[in-house]
Length: 288
Length: 291
Image (cartoon, rainbow over all chains, first blue to last red; front, side, top):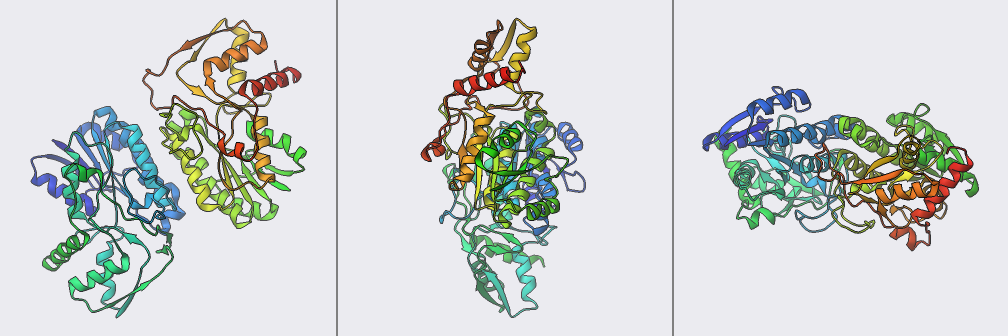
Protein backbone atom coordinates (compact mmCIF):
# COMPACT_ATOMS: atom_id res chain seq x y z
CA UNK A 1 0.00 0.00 0.00
CA UNK A 2 1.04 3.58 -0.56
CA UNK A 3 0.73 5.99 2.33
CA UNK A 4 1.20 9.73 2.59
CA UNK A 5 1.95 11.30 5.98
CA UNK A 6 1.51 15.00 6.62
CA UNK A 7 3.65 16.65 9.34
CA UNK A 8 6.08 13.75 9.61
CA UNK A 9 8.40 15.42 12.12
CA UNK A 10 5.74 15.61 14.82
CA UNK A 11 5.69 13.14 17.73
CA UNK A 12 3.09 10.99 16.08
CA UNK A 13 4.21 11.57 12.51
CA UNK A 14 7.68 10.26 13.30
CA UNK A 15 6.41 7.06 14.93
CA UNK A 16 4.03 6.39 12.05
CA UNK A 17 6.72 6.88 9.42
CA UNK A 18 9.06 4.50 11.25
CA UNK A 19 6.33 1.85 11.36
CA UNK A 20 5.30 2.38 7.75
CA UNK A 21 8.87 2.07 6.52
CA UNK A 22 9.46 -1.10 8.52
CA UNK A 23 6.28 -2.62 7.10
CA UNK A 24 5.78 -3.47 3.45
CA UNK A 25 4.45 -0.07 2.47
CA UNK A 26 5.47 2.79 0.21
CA UNK A 27 5.72 6.15 1.93
CA UNK A 28 5.57 9.80 0.86
CA UNK A 29 5.91 12.11 3.81
CA UNK A 30 6.30 15.81 4.40
CA UNK A 31 7.22 18.12 7.23
CA UNK A 32 5.24 21.31 7.91
CA UNK A 33 7.86 23.53 6.22
CA UNK A 34 7.97 21.22 3.20
CA UNK A 35 4.21 21.20 2.80
CA UNK A 36 2.18 23.87 4.53
CA UNK A 37 -1.20 22.32 5.19
CA UNK A 38 -2.87 25.66 4.60
CA UNK A 39 -1.35 25.98 1.12
CA UNK A 40 -4.37 24.40 -0.51
CA UNK A 41 -3.11 24.35 -4.08
CA UNK A 42 0.21 22.78 -3.14
CA UNK A 43 -1.46 20.21 -0.89
CA UNK A 44 -3.91 19.25 -3.64
CA UNK A 45 -1.11 18.98 -6.20
CA UNK A 46 1.07 16.89 -3.88
CA UNK A 47 -1.71 14.48 -3.01
CA UNK A 48 -2.70 14.06 -6.64
CA UNK A 49 0.89 13.47 -7.73
CA UNK A 50 1.64 10.98 -4.97
CA UNK A 51 -1.76 9.26 -5.40
CA UNK A 52 -1.61 7.34 -2.12
CA UNK A 53 -4.12 4.75 -0.91
CA UNK A 54 -4.13 6.37 2.52
CA UNK A 55 -3.46 9.96 3.62
CA UNK A 56 -2.55 10.37 7.28
CA UNK A 57 -2.90 13.92 8.56
CA UNK A 58 -0.97 14.47 11.79
CA UNK A 59 -0.65 18.26 11.43
CA UNK A 60 -2.07 20.12 14.38
CA UNK A 61 -2.16 23.54 16.01
CA UNK A 62 -2.01 22.62 19.67
CA UNK A 63 -4.06 23.92 22.60
CA UNK A 64 -2.40 27.23 23.54
CA UNK A 65 -3.54 30.69 24.63
CA UNK A 66 -2.15 32.01 21.32
CA UNK A 67 -4.52 29.75 19.44
CA UNK A 68 -7.46 30.91 21.51
CA UNK A 69 -6.66 34.51 20.55
CA UNK A 70 -6.05 33.70 16.93
CA UNK A 71 -8.92 31.52 15.77
CA UNK A 72 -8.17 32.12 12.07
CA UNK A 73 -4.79 30.47 12.42
CA UNK A 74 -6.08 27.76 14.75
CA UNK A 75 -9.04 26.77 12.57
CA UNK A 76 -6.94 27.21 9.45
CA UNK A 77 -4.75 24.30 10.52
CA UNK A 78 -7.12 22.11 12.54
CA UNK A 79 -10.30 22.51 10.55
CA UNK A 80 -10.39 24.37 7.26
CA UNK A 81 -7.31 22.68 5.82
CA UNK A 82 -9.40 19.51 5.92
CA UNK A 83 -11.90 20.86 3.40
CA UNK A 84 -9.18 20.75 0.77
CA UNK A 85 -7.57 17.54 2.04
CA UNK A 86 -10.87 15.64 2.28
CA UNK A 87 -12.12 16.84 -1.11
CA UNK A 88 -8.82 15.83 -2.71
CA UNK A 89 -8.89 12.42 -1.01
CA UNK A 90 -12.39 11.89 -2.37
CA UNK A 91 -11.21 12.82 -5.83
CA UNK A 92 -8.23 10.45 -5.77
CA UNK A 93 -10.13 7.72 -3.92
CA UNK A 94 -7.86 7.79 -0.91
CA UNK A 95 -8.74 6.91 2.66
CA UNK A 96 -8.23 9.84 5.00
CA UNK A 97 -7.02 9.48 8.57
CA UNK A 98 -7.04 12.52 10.82
CA UNK A 99 -6.36 12.88 14.52
CA UNK A 100 -8.45 14.86 16.95
CA UNK A 101 -8.73 15.27 20.66
CA UNK A 102 -10.52 14.55 23.93
CA UNK A 103 -11.03 18.32 24.03
CA UNK A 104 -14.00 17.99 21.66
CA UNK A 105 -15.84 17.11 24.89
CA UNK A 106 -16.80 19.43 27.78
CA UNK A 107 -15.60 17.00 30.42
CA UNK A 108 -18.82 17.15 32.43
CA UNK A 109 -20.03 13.62 31.84
CA UNK A 110 -18.12 12.16 34.78
CA UNK A 111 -17.13 9.00 32.92
CA UNK A 112 -14.80 8.23 30.03
CA UNK A 113 -16.28 9.33 26.71
CA UNK A 114 -17.35 6.79 24.12
CA UNK A 115 -17.15 7.34 20.39
CA UNK A 116 -20.84 8.16 20.04
CA UNK A 117 -21.06 10.63 22.90
CA UNK A 118 -21.98 14.11 21.68
CA UNK A 119 -19.02 16.51 21.47
CA UNK A 120 -19.38 19.87 23.17
CA UNK A 121 -16.08 21.75 23.22
CA UNK A 122 -15.55 24.57 25.72
CA UNK A 123 -12.68 26.35 24.05
CA UNK A 124 -11.62 27.24 20.49
CA UNK A 125 -9.03 24.45 20.36
CA UNK A 126 -11.58 21.68 20.97
CA UNK A 127 -14.03 23.37 18.63
CA UNK A 128 -11.41 23.55 15.87
CA UNK A 129 -10.81 19.82 16.28
CA UNK A 130 -14.53 19.04 16.31
CA UNK A 131 -15.09 21.09 13.17
CA UNK A 132 -12.16 19.25 11.57
CA UNK A 133 -13.90 15.95 12.33
CA UNK A 134 -17.17 17.08 10.76
CA UNK A 135 -15.39 18.32 7.66
CA UNK A 136 -13.24 15.21 7.25
CA UNK A 137 -16.20 12.84 7.69
CA UNK A 138 -18.57 14.76 5.43
CA UNK A 139 -16.27 15.69 2.58
CA UNK A 140 -14.64 12.30 2.04
CA UNK A 141 -16.68 9.09 2.34
CA UNK A 142 -13.70 6.92 3.38
CA UNK A 143 -12.51 8.75 6.47
CA UNK A 144 -11.32 7.58 9.87
CA UNK A 145 -11.14 10.07 12.72
CA UNK A 146 -8.93 9.01 15.61
CA UNK A 147 -9.53 10.84 18.86
CA UNK A 148 -6.65 10.68 21.28
CA UNK A 149 -5.37 12.49 24.36
CA UNK A 150 -2.21 13.74 26.04
CA UNK A 151 0.20 12.38 23.44
CA UNK A 152 3.87 12.12 24.38
CA UNK A 153 6.76 10.53 22.55
CA UNK A 154 10.16 10.98 20.99
CA UNK A 155 13.36 12.42 22.28
CA UNK A 156 12.29 16.00 21.81
CA UNK A 157 8.53 15.63 21.71
CA UNK A 158 6.50 18.11 19.71
CA UNK A 159 8.36 20.92 17.99
CA UNK A 160 5.94 23.49 19.29
CA UNK A 161 5.51 22.35 22.87
CA UNK A 162 7.77 19.32 23.59
CA UNK A 163 5.43 17.13 25.65
CA UNK A 164 4.13 16.84 29.21
CA UNK A 165 6.66 14.20 30.27
CA UNK A 166 9.71 16.05 28.97
CA UNK A 167 8.44 19.35 30.32
CA UNK A 168 7.93 18.06 33.83
CA UNK A 169 11.24 16.22 33.85
CA UNK A 170 12.90 19.44 32.74
CA UNK A 171 11.10 21.49 35.37
CA UNK A 172 12.12 19.03 38.09
CA UNK A 173 15.80 19.83 37.48
CA UNK A 174 15.37 23.22 39.11
CA UNK A 175 12.48 22.65 41.51
CA UNK A 176 11.96 20.58 44.63
CA UNK A 177 8.18 20.96 44.43
CA UNK A 178 6.00 21.26 41.32
CA UNK A 179 2.31 22.16 41.41
CA UNK A 180 0.29 20.07 38.97
CA UNK A 181 -3.45 20.12 38.38
CA UNK A 182 -5.33 17.42 40.23
CA UNK A 183 -8.80 17.89 38.80
CA UNK A 184 -8.34 17.22 35.06
CA UNK A 185 -8.70 13.51 34.35
CA UNK A 186 -7.17 12.36 31.09
CA UNK A 187 -5.82 9.31 29.24
CA UNK A 188 -2.17 10.19 28.52
CA UNK A 189 -0.98 8.27 25.47
CA UNK A 190 2.43 7.06 24.34
CA UNK A 191 2.87 8.03 20.69
CA UNK A 192 4.48 4.69 19.89
CA UNK A 193 1.45 2.74 21.20
CA UNK A 194 -0.87 5.10 19.33
CA UNK A 195 1.06 4.56 16.10
CA UNK A 196 0.90 0.77 16.41
CA UNK A 197 -2.86 0.80 17.02
CA UNK A 198 -3.35 3.32 14.21
CA UNK A 199 -1.54 1.13 11.68
CA UNK A 200 -3.57 -1.90 12.79
CA UNK A 201 -6.79 0.07 12.37
CA UNK A 202 -6.28 1.94 9.13
CA UNK A 203 -5.56 -1.12 7.01
CA UNK A 204 -8.89 -2.67 8.04
CA UNK A 205 -11.46 -2.45 5.23
CA UNK A 206 -14.28 -2.48 7.80
CA UNK A 207 -12.94 0.58 9.61
CA UNK A 208 -14.95 3.78 9.24
CA UNK A 209 -15.85 6.85 11.26
CA UNK A 210 -14.67 7.83 14.73
CA UNK A 211 -12.38 5.80 16.99
CA UNK A 212 -10.93 6.47 20.42
CA UNK A 213 -7.32 5.35 20.69
CA UNK A 214 -5.57 6.11 23.99
CA UNK A 215 -3.59 4.07 26.48
CA UNK A 216 -6.20 2.39 28.67
CA UNK A 217 -7.28 3.76 32.02
CA UNK A 218 -7.07 7.36 33.14
CA UNK A 219 -5.49 9.62 35.75
CA UNK A 220 -5.09 13.22 36.75
CA UNK A 221 -2.08 15.17 35.50
CA UNK A 222 -0.84 15.17 39.12
CA UNK A 223 -0.99 11.35 39.28
CA UNK A 224 0.69 11.14 35.87
CA UNK A 225 3.45 13.45 37.11
CA UNK A 226 3.98 11.43 40.29
CA UNK A 227 4.37 8.30 38.18
CA UNK A 228 6.89 10.08 35.93
CA UNK A 229 8.94 11.04 38.99
CA UNK A 230 8.76 7.53 40.39
CA UNK A 231 9.78 5.80 37.15
CA UNK A 232 12.66 8.17 36.49
CA UNK A 233 13.89 8.21 40.08
CA UNK A 234 13.48 11.97 40.42
CA UNK A 235 12.88 13.17 43.97
CA UNK A 236 10.96 16.37 43.16
CA UNK A 237 7.63 16.42 44.99
CA UNK A 238 4.45 16.74 42.97
CA UNK A 239 1.86 18.90 44.71
CA UNK A 240 -1.70 18.33 43.46
CA UNK A 241 -3.56 21.63 42.95
CA UNK A 242 -7.21 21.99 41.97
CA UNK A 243 -7.00 24.49 39.15
CA UNK A 244 -10.77 24.30 38.55
CA UNK A 245 -10.29 23.53 34.89
CA UNK A 246 -8.22 26.60 34.05
CA UNK A 247 -4.58 25.91 33.37
CA UNK A 248 -2.00 26.92 30.80
CA UNK A 249 -4.21 29.90 29.94
CA UNK A 250 -7.12 27.79 28.67
CA UNK A 251 -10.39 26.40 29.96
CA UNK A 252 -9.99 22.64 30.07
CA UNK A 253 -12.48 19.80 30.40
CA UNK A 254 -12.52 18.27 33.88
CA UNK A 255 -12.99 14.61 32.96
CA UNK A 256 -12.05 13.99 29.35
CA UNK A 257 -10.71 10.45 29.49
CA UNK A 258 -11.62 8.49 26.36
CA UNK A 259 -12.88 4.96 26.20
CA UNK A 260 -12.01 2.73 23.25
CA UNK A 261 -15.11 0.70 22.43
CA UNK A 262 -15.08 0.55 18.62
CA UNK A 263 -11.49 -0.45 17.89
CA UNK A 264 -11.59 -2.80 20.86
CA UNK A 265 -14.53 -4.60 19.26
CA UNK A 266 -12.22 -5.15 16.27
CA UNK A 267 -9.47 -6.56 18.48
CA UNK A 268 -7.42 -3.35 18.57
CA UNK A 269 -6.51 -1.85 21.93
CA UNK A 270 -3.61 -0.09 23.67
CA UNK A 271 -1.71 -1.05 26.83
CA UNK A 272 -2.47 0.63 30.18
CA UNK A 273 -1.13 4.19 30.62
CA UNK A 274 1.38 3.21 33.31
CA UNK A 275 2.86 0.61 30.99
CA UNK A 276 3.16 3.09 28.12
CA UNK A 277 4.84 5.60 30.40
CA UNK A 278 7.27 3.00 31.75
CA UNK A 279 8.44 2.10 28.25
CA UNK A 280 8.80 5.78 27.31
CA UNK A 281 10.92 6.57 30.36
CA UNK A 282 13.08 3.53 29.58
CA UNK A 283 13.43 4.75 26.00
CA UNK A 284 14.50 8.20 27.24
CA UNK A 285 17.07 6.64 29.59
CA UNK A 286 18.51 4.63 26.69
CA UNK A 287 18.50 7.54 24.25
CA UNK A 288 19.46 10.60 26.26
CA UNK B 1 -35.94 47.87 27.20
CA UNK B 2 -32.96 48.61 24.97
CA UNK B 3 -31.94 46.29 22.19
CA UNK B 4 -28.78 46.35 20.11
CA UNK B 5 -29.32 44.87 16.66
CA UNK B 6 -26.53 43.71 14.37
CA UNK B 7 -27.32 42.85 10.76
CA UNK B 8 -30.19 45.31 10.66
CA UNK B 9 -30.68 45.26 6.89
CA UNK B 10 -31.29 41.53 6.50
CA UNK B 11 -34.76 39.97 6.35
CA UNK B 12 -34.75 39.13 10.04
CA UNK B 13 -33.09 42.38 11.12
CA UNK B 14 -35.60 44.45 9.17
CA UNK B 15 -38.49 42.54 10.74
CA UNK B 16 -37.05 43.02 14.25
CA UNK B 17 -36.77 46.77 13.66
CA UNK B 18 -40.34 46.81 12.47
CA UNK B 19 -41.81 44.98 15.45
CA UNK B 20 -39.71 46.31 18.31
CA UNK B 21 -41.85 49.37 18.91
CA UNK B 22 -44.96 47.29 19.58
CA UNK B 23 -43.02 45.64 22.39
CA UNK B 24 -41.91 48.99 23.79
CA UNK B 25 -38.34 48.23 22.85
CA UNK B 26 -35.91 50.86 21.58
CA UNK B 27 -33.38 49.59 19.08
CA UNK B 28 -29.83 50.66 18.29
CA UNK B 29 -29.29 49.15 14.87
CA UNK B 30 -25.98 48.55 13.14
CA UNK B 31 -25.24 47.68 9.55
CA UNK B 32 -22.01 46.01 8.46
CA UNK B 33 -20.55 49.38 7.58
CA UNK B 34 -21.41 50.80 10.97
CA UNK B 35 -20.01 47.94 13.04
CA UNK B 36 -17.63 45.23 11.87
CA UNK B 37 -18.49 42.41 14.24
CA UNK B 38 -15.16 40.74 13.51
CA UNK B 39 -13.49 43.65 15.32
CA UNK B 40 -13.42 42.52 18.94
CA UNK B 41 -12.44 45.96 20.23
CA UNK B 42 -15.18 47.75 18.30
CA UNK B 43 -17.80 45.25 19.50
CA UNK B 44 -16.71 45.62 23.13
CA UNK B 45 -16.70 49.42 22.94
CA UNK B 46 -20.07 49.60 21.23
CA UNK B 47 -21.80 47.29 23.69
CA UNK B 48 -20.20 49.12 26.62
CA UNK B 49 -21.42 52.43 25.20
CA UNK B 50 -24.98 51.36 24.33
CA UNK B 51 -25.53 49.22 27.45
CA UNK B 52 -28.32 47.18 25.86
CA UNK B 53 -30.52 44.73 27.74
CA UNK B 54 -30.20 42.39 24.79
CA UNK B 55 -28.01 42.01 21.74
CA UNK B 56 -29.50 40.39 18.66
CA UNK B 57 -27.24 39.13 15.91
CA UNK B 58 -29.28 38.95 12.74
CA UNK B 59 -26.22 38.88 10.51
CA UNK B 60 -24.62 35.84 9.00
CA UNK B 61 -22.75 34.41 6.06
CA UNK B 62 -25.48 32.22 4.72
CA UNK B 63 -25.23 31.58 1.01
CA UNK B 64 -24.30 27.90 0.91
CA UNK B 65 -22.11 27.85 -2.21
CA UNK B 66 -20.24 30.94 -0.93
CA UNK B 67 -19.50 29.11 2.31
CA UNK B 68 -18.07 26.24 0.29
CA UNK B 69 -15.82 28.59 -1.68
CA UNK B 70 -14.85 30.82 1.22
CA UNK B 71 -14.95 28.74 4.40
CA UNK B 72 -12.65 31.19 6.20
CA UNK B 73 -15.23 33.92 5.69
CA UNK B 74 -18.03 31.65 6.91
CA UNK B 75 -16.10 31.00 10.09
CA UNK B 76 -15.17 34.64 10.60
CA UNK B 77 -18.77 35.77 10.47
CA UNK B 78 -20.66 32.76 11.82
CA UNK B 79 -18.20 31.73 14.54
CA UNK B 80 -15.48 34.15 15.67
CA UNK B 81 -17.68 37.27 15.37
CA UNK B 82 -20.48 35.45 17.20
CA UNK B 83 -18.06 34.54 19.98
CA UNK B 84 -17.10 38.22 20.26
CA UNK B 85 -20.72 39.31 20.45
CA UNK B 86 -21.66 36.61 22.97
CA UNK B 87 -18.63 37.29 25.14
CA UNK B 88 -19.15 41.06 25.18
CA UNK B 89 -22.89 40.71 25.79
CA UNK B 90 -22.19 38.48 28.79
CA UNK B 91 -19.64 40.92 30.17
CA UNK B 92 -22.26 43.69 29.89
CA UNK B 93 -24.96 41.56 31.51
CA UNK B 94 -27.03 41.55 28.32
CA UNK B 95 -29.00 38.70 26.80
CA UNK B 96 -27.75 37.50 23.44
CA UNK B 97 -29.69 36.15 20.49
CA UNK B 98 -28.11 34.31 17.58
CA UNK B 99 -29.88 32.64 14.69
CA UNK B 100 -29.08 29.18 13.47
CA UNK B 101 -30.44 26.72 10.96
CA UNK B 102 -32.04 23.37 10.21
CA UNK B 103 -28.75 22.58 8.48
CA UNK B 104 -27.09 21.67 11.77
CA UNK B 105 -28.98 18.39 11.25
CA UNK B 106 -28.26 15.76 8.61
CA UNK B 107 -31.92 15.16 7.85
CA UNK B 108 -31.60 11.42 8.44
CA UNK B 109 -34.54 11.48 10.85
CA UNK B 110 -37.71 11.70 8.77
CA UNK B 111 -39.62 13.75 11.30
CA UNK B 112 -39.43 17.41 12.32
CA UNK B 113 -36.25 17.92 14.32
CA UNK B 114 -36.61 18.75 18.00
CA UNK B 115 -34.26 21.07 19.85
CA UNK B 116 -32.38 18.34 21.68
CA UNK B 117 -31.83 15.99 18.77
CA UNK B 118 -28.20 15.16 17.96
CA UNK B 119 -26.72 17.46 15.36
CA UNK B 120 -24.59 16.43 12.38
CA UNK B 121 -24.12 19.20 9.83
CA UNK B 122 -23.14 18.01 6.37
CA UNK B 123 -21.65 21.11 4.78
CA UNK B 124 -19.57 24.19 5.62
CA UNK B 125 -22.57 26.43 6.24
CA UNK B 126 -24.21 24.05 8.73
CA UNK B 127 -20.86 23.27 10.36
CA UNK B 128 -20.07 26.96 10.82
CA UNK B 129 -23.55 27.60 12.26
CA UNK B 130 -23.22 24.70 14.70
CA UNK B 131 -19.84 26.06 15.76
CA UNK B 132 -21.56 29.44 16.27
CA UNK B 133 -24.15 27.79 18.53
CA UNK B 134 -21.42 26.17 20.59
CA UNK B 135 -19.43 29.38 21.13
CA UNK B 136 -22.65 31.24 21.95
CA UNK B 137 -23.56 29.03 24.88
CA UNK B 138 -19.99 28.66 26.13
CA UNK B 139 -19.58 32.46 26.28
CA UNK B 140 -23.06 33.51 27.37
CA UNK B 141 -25.18 32.28 30.24
CA UNK B 142 -28.23 34.08 28.90
CA UNK B 143 -28.28 33.40 25.21
CA UNK B 144 -30.94 32.14 22.85
CA UNK B 145 -30.00 30.22 19.76
CA UNK B 146 -33.01 30.42 17.48
CA UNK B 147 -32.92 27.76 14.80
CA UNK B 148 -35.09 28.49 11.84
CA UNK B 149 -35.69 27.48 8.22
CA UNK B 150 -37.10 28.85 5.00
CA UNK B 151 -37.19 32.51 6.06
CA UNK B 152 -38.96 35.01 3.85
CA UNK B 153 -39.84 38.62 4.56
CA UNK B 154 -39.71 42.22 3.43
CA UNK B 155 -40.45 43.84 0.10
CA UNK B 156 -37.19 42.79 -1.41
CA UNK B 157 -36.11 39.92 0.79
CA UNK B 158 -32.46 39.23 1.43
CA UNK B 159 -30.07 41.57 -0.33
CA UNK B 160 -27.36 39.00 -0.70
CA UNK B 161 -29.68 36.26 -1.87
CA UNK B 162 -31.38 38.77 -4.18
CA UNK B 163 -34.79 38.12 -2.70
CA UNK B 164 -36.21 35.05 -1.07
CA UNK B 165 -37.95 31.90 -2.29
CA UNK B 166 -41.39 33.55 -2.43
CA UNK B 167 -40.17 36.56 -4.38
CA UNK B 168 -38.20 34.23 -6.64
CA UNK B 169 -41.32 32.23 -7.54
CA UNK B 170 -43.29 35.42 -8.12
CA UNK B 171 -40.56 36.85 -10.31
CA UNK B 172 -40.35 33.68 -12.39
CA UNK B 173 -44.15 33.67 -12.73
CA UNK B 174 -43.96 37.02 -14.54
CA UNK B 175 -41.87 35.66 -17.38
CA UNK B 176 -42.22 31.88 -17.43
CA UNK B 177 -44.94 29.30 -17.96
CA UNK B 178 -43.21 26.45 -16.09
CA UNK B 179 -40.61 26.28 -13.35
CA UNK B 180 -38.65 23.33 -12.00
CA UNK B 181 -38.47 23.07 -8.23
CA UNK B 182 -36.59 20.35 -6.38
CA UNK B 183 -38.95 17.79 -4.92
CA UNK B 184 -36.53 15.87 -2.73
CA UNK B 185 -36.50 18.23 0.20
CA UNK B 186 -39.07 18.79 2.88
CA UNK B 187 -38.78 21.92 4.98
CA UNK B 188 -40.35 24.29 7.43
CA UNK B 189 -40.98 27.87 6.45
CA UNK B 190 -41.26 31.08 8.43
CA UNK B 191 -42.57 34.56 7.81
CA UNK B 192 -39.79 36.85 9.09
CA UNK B 193 -42.39 38.96 10.88
CA UNK B 194 -43.44 35.95 12.96
CA UNK B 195 -39.82 35.04 13.62
CA UNK B 196 -39.11 38.57 14.82
CA UNK B 197 -42.17 38.59 17.07
CA UNK B 198 -41.21 35.32 18.74
CA UNK B 199 -37.64 36.56 19.17
CA UNK B 200 -38.92 39.64 20.97
CA UNK B 201 -41.34 37.55 23.05
CA UNK B 202 -38.53 35.29 24.22
CA UNK B 203 -36.46 38.30 25.23
CA UNK B 204 -39.24 40.26 26.96
CA UNK B 205 -40.61 37.17 28.71
CA UNK B 206 -37.07 36.42 29.88
CA UNK B 207 -37.35 32.84 28.72
CA UNK B 208 -34.76 30.34 29.92
CA UNK B 209 -31.57 30.46 27.85
CA UNK B 210 -30.97 27.71 25.31
CA UNK B 211 -31.90 26.53 21.86
CA UNK B 212 -35.32 27.25 20.40
CA UNK B 213 -36.79 26.14 17.09
CA UNK B 214 -38.95 28.86 15.56
CA UNK B 215 -40.80 28.21 12.31
CA UNK B 216 -44.40 28.48 11.17
CA UNK B 217 -46.32 25.34 12.04
CA UNK B 218 -46.25 22.28 9.81
CA UNK B 219 -43.96 21.40 6.95
CA UNK B 220 -44.07 20.48 3.29
CA UNK B 221 -41.94 20.09 0.20
CA UNK B 222 -40.57 23.16 -1.54
CA UNK B 223 -42.73 22.07 -4.49
CA UNK B 224 -45.93 22.39 -2.48
CA UNK B 225 -44.72 25.65 -0.96
CA UNK B 226 -44.18 26.95 -4.50
CA UNK B 227 -47.61 25.69 -5.58
CA UNK B 228 -49.25 27.51 -2.67
CA UNK B 229 -47.51 30.75 -3.66
CA UNK B 230 -48.84 30.32 -7.18
CA UNK B 231 -52.33 29.55 -5.90
CA UNK B 232 -52.46 32.55 -3.55
CA UNK B 233 -51.46 34.93 -6.31
CA UNK B 234 -53.66 33.40 -8.98
CA UNK B 235 -50.65 32.88 -11.20
CA UNK B 236 -50.63 30.46 -14.13
CA UNK B 237 -47.08 29.26 -13.46
CA UNK B 238 -46.81 25.48 -13.57
CA UNK B 239 -44.48 24.04 -10.94
CA UNK B 240 -42.61 20.97 -12.15
CA UNK B 241 -41.17 18.73 -9.42
CA UNK B 242 -37.63 17.57 -10.10
CA UNK B 243 -35.78 15.09 -7.93
CA UNK B 244 -32.27 16.48 -7.63
CA UNK B 245 -31.20 14.20 -4.79
CA UNK B 246 -29.27 11.88 -7.07
CA UNK B 247 -27.40 14.73 -8.73
CA UNK B 248 -23.74 14.97 -7.92
CA UNK B 249 -23.01 18.01 -5.86
CA UNK B 250 -19.95 19.53 -4.25
CA UNK B 251 -21.71 19.56 -0.92
CA UNK B 252 -24.49 17.69 0.83
CA UNK B 253 -27.73 19.10 2.18
CA UNK B 254 -30.27 17.37 4.40
CA UNK B 255 -33.37 16.00 2.69
CA UNK B 256 -35.63 16.46 5.70
CA UNK B 257 -35.21 20.02 6.98
CA UNK B 258 -38.37 20.53 8.98
CA UNK B 259 -38.14 21.76 12.56
CA UNK B 260 -40.51 21.22 15.48
CA UNK B 261 -41.16 24.14 17.84
CA UNK B 262 -41.19 22.10 21.04
CA UNK B 263 -39.71 24.63 23.42
CA UNK B 264 -41.61 27.73 22.36
CA UNK B 265 -44.83 25.74 22.52
CA UNK B 266 -43.98 24.75 26.08
CA UNK B 267 -43.81 28.46 26.92
CA UNK B 268 -47.20 29.08 25.36
CA UNK B 269 -45.66 30.85 22.37
CA UNK B 270 -47.22 29.59 19.17
CA UNK B 271 -46.93 30.39 15.50
CA UNK B 272 -49.62 29.95 12.90
CA UNK B 273 -49.40 27.43 10.08
CA UNK B 274 -46.99 27.94 7.21
CA UNK B 275 -49.97 28.44 4.91
CA UNK B 276 -51.20 31.27 7.12
CA UNK B 277 -47.74 32.83 7.38
CA UNK B 278 -47.44 32.74 3.61
CA UNK B 279 -50.91 34.17 3.13
CA UNK B 280 -50.10 37.17 5.31
CA UNK B 281 -46.86 37.75 3.43
CA UNK B 282 -48.59 37.69 0.05
CA UNK B 283 -51.19 40.13 1.40
CA UNK B 284 -48.39 42.37 2.66
CA UNK B 285 -46.67 42.32 -0.72
CA UNK B 286 -49.94 43.23 -2.42
CA UNK B 287 -50.46 46.16 -0.03
CA UNK B 288 -46.89 47.32 -0.61
CA UNK B 289 -47.44 47.06 -4.38
CA UNK B 290 -44.44 44.77 -4.54
CA UNK B 291 -46.56 42.39 -6.62
